[in-house]
Image 1 (cartoon, one colour):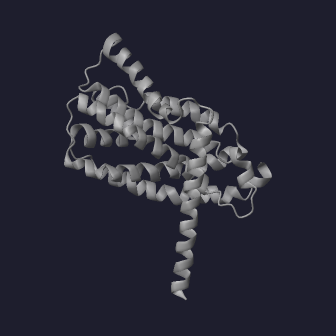
Image 2: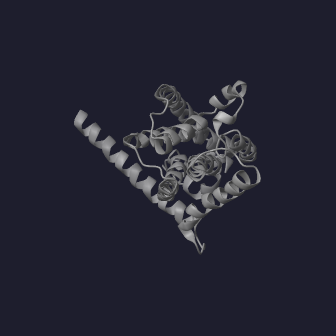
Image 3: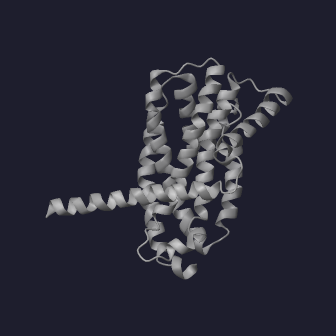
Length: 263
């Protein structure tokens, strides 16, 4: 009896993973449909941002940050994954009316699709970061093996935030606009193009309340500095993410009963 139940669960899990893969492929195809450069935009966007930051903060308003290209590009990859996932997730239900109206369709998989698509973009852009690191004379250290832990943590944290955003936006369509303003503020309050050490010490507490700051700093510790990240802080963030994920999913599940009616 227990074996049959376990087998059914495994079968259901495999079905969901297959569905997740198909939806991610569909999202990427839609995103770059009729685009001449296609997936190349995954690299072009952060490279253009890097060019702007390098011009402004190396030539116009010079900042004293060693290995600036690797420093900025690593932060941009982490931030772009986080930002694009949250922003796209707010419209993921309203933009998939046909799927939501299908009986039995697991709507909870859609926010995970946006985060997985962001992870793929992150992974595709990672070799460019390695090129910048090579140019800056940075050698990879064994601590690089811990990077999958950061990827998993960022994935879980982001999914936990996308669930309530996707659900709330169905009934409160201003969510996406409000989120855009908040993300714009967070962009400047995250040390992407400047060093956290340059922030006045009495203001750093504000930065430490932003979980994406810890992630950005941890990626840089592993990739650029080749040192151990702050494992205790990451452990606290992991525990917080584990708590937030079921809460976010529960909010989504409760709201999902009204999706068809609202759409």
